Length: 96
Image (cartoon, rainbow, N blue to C red; front, side):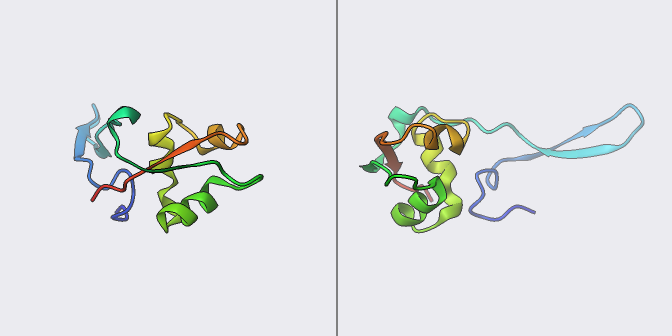
């Protein structure tokens, strides 16, 4: 049900059965490697007003991979990175 480039794609699907007998499927928790353990492709300072999806398209070739830059910069939300203009951002080497 998830696209192969989704950050949740490779996570195991588990099930939970409620008291009423209904089975609910869910993805297991995603653990993120510390940024220091990610290989860095480059470091960039976004252009003034550049959104993270545009920066990701420019650096990784796919705007939907913005979550990789969030992971590499210890940000839970892309908006955290956009709030600090002229911040040097680590661009991680994509993993297979």
